[in-house]
Image 1 (cartoon, rainbow, N blue to C red):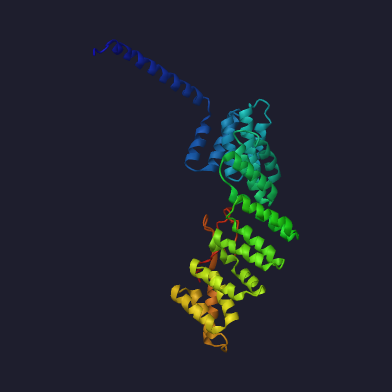
Image 2 (cartoon, helix red, strand yellow):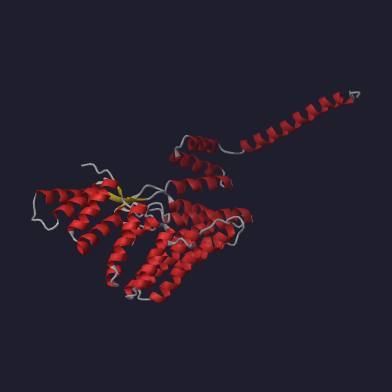
Length: 388
């Protein structure tokens, strides 16, 4: 096939057009940047070198030269918020909103920034009002709903939290069943304290609808039944925890044993707990089993149980139970001092730890006080090294 050499004549033309286009872009860029004050670029340099205080000074100076530069307002407002100068951030963003010449896009941007200012400043009523307006916009709806959810959780307004979480789930497509179930449980907890077990039960069933693996809901339903002396019903609900997340038996083993004894089925309870301890290696449950065995079947049975457990899992807690069984019924002596020392050590070093942020606490939490995530505390404690 013959090559068409006329294309070669067009190459210089393409080169010239590209050169002209590049010159136009560079020229436009130079014109735009030449209008910016030098302090603007100093501010950028300070930001890059992570010196926010000096960046604030530079941007503030730049605003004095050109108060109409919106980018500077937003950059400075973000810096104010980042450094905790909330009054200045609020005044700056409020000043922008007061301008009558703002277009709708910029106005919404300023409204979003101001709502974040109020949130960080702890002015939750004002933040809530602005975020509610932003939920009606396409661009900021998801961000606003997340912020509202944070506010309602902080304020323990669980009905509003449920409603907002459902809207956010529908809008984002991300499942929030775990959180919604926990909100229902928190609401149920409030109703139990108010003496409204029937309303609480309805919310707990709603929690299981939102998340069928919500162990907390079954645990609380069992508590309601036990408080009404319906021990068989309570045990049925608590046993369901094994089918959901068996490690959470740790939190209810003692309550289960109380109900087995109240219903005259203590031996059945001992066998069930022993099976759970062997299957799932539950440390707290092993202690409940040991104490019940010692009380119901005597020191010899408790010693055999503790000895078998120490053979399988030779932990300090297992040794403590073995020694307790050994000295049960004996007068106080040196061995009891050893037991007391072990007990004090275990109590001093046993903690729950959040799997998300690593926060530690002696008490179990459904909602981490540090990172605010739900169901991140394993029910079993771990031994924390404590420096003397």
